[in-house]
Structures are given as C-alpha cells and as structure tokens.
Length: 233
Image (cartoon, rainbow, N blue to C red; front, side):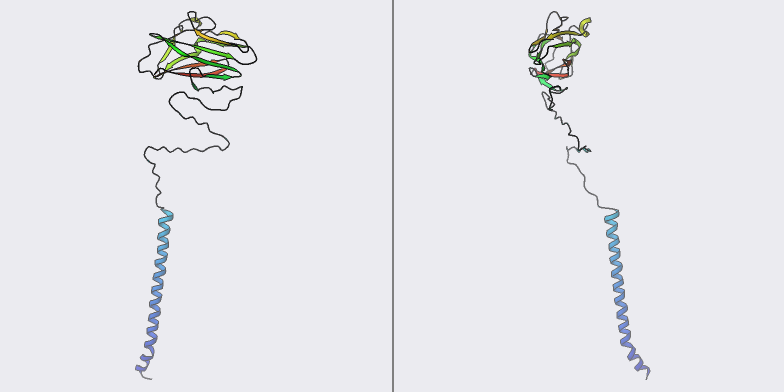
C-alpha cells in the first residue's frame, strides 16, 4: 500500500479525534464555569450576606424586652390630669393603690374606711386651706393616729408649700382621735392646730402661672401615698 493511501485512511480518524478533543474542552470549560458560579454564589450569600435594612421611621421608638409569660405587666399610661393606677383590689388592699392621684372629693378606701380631701380649697392672699374627711364604714370603731408633718402640698411647677405650724413642737407629734362604726370625722384647718383633729393652713404665694395643686398624705388609717389634684385654672 502506498503512503498516499495510508494518509487517506488516517485523515477521517484524525478529524474524529480532533472533534472529540474539542468537545471535551467545551465540556471541561462548562464544568469549571459552573463550579466557579457555585463558589461565587456561596461566597456572596453565605459568607457575606446582603445587608437587611433595619432603619426605624423618624420619631419612632424601638423597645426590646424579654417578658416572663407567667406575669402580667402593669402598664401605666401617663396623661394630663389625675392619675389612677387601675387594679383589682380586695377589701384589705388600698383602692386606688398608693401613688394614685384623684380629684378633690374622690376617696381612697381600705377595709371599709375612706379618706377624702374635700373641695373646695380656700385661698387667701398668701395662704390656702382645706379639710380632710375620714369615713368609717367598717363594723368596728377605729383609732385615727396622724401627724401634721405627714400632709404636704405642692404645685405643678414643683414649688412646695409649708404649713404655718412647721416651727412648732407639735408639728411632728402623733395626734389621735376615735371614730365609731358608721361615723365620720374631719381634720379641719383652724385657729388651734395643736388639737387632735386640727390642721393648720399652708403658706406661700401662688404664682399666676400655676395650673394646679397636689395634696399628699404620706400615711393615714392604714393607707399611704394618697394624692389629690386641684385645678386652679
């Protein structure tokens, strides 16, 4: 067989082999590109995830808390005017609870006893006066023990007003009187503030800018931190 015949027989085989090599190169390139794309996707999403927006609208507040599911939170909403902390009280508990602020004429109660600052407040040139009413709706006589020093007054600007008798020895002494079952008794301002049921007047000029007064009793007949608000304007 001649050399030209040998080349004729090998040319088709060479073409086929070349085609196979080319196809393998294309497949290899595709596989490499695919793997690169997988690695690129994993890197952009897994190692460096795209940031998630956590912006808060202007003026909003974000509060994070871990709550105990066994407890019911007490929520107090601050509003202008009297503040009553709502609760379900038993006869042995103060109602409303300590720290509440009532309008004059409204009462705090406990075990059938009620304490009220009676309206109105009487104003003089540089003084003001008010009375405290105690009602005994219980089935027993009660003994009321109290001090002038446990009663306070301030206004909405924070100014504190003092009783006229604060420089007297009896101001911090314990006074007492009894109220029978079904009876009532007032602690009144009077010219004899040392008497068991007498309260002296409060002194101080009330400025035109003052909107309201707050009367506070620290403790009386088993109740504490009782507050009343009187709106001047």
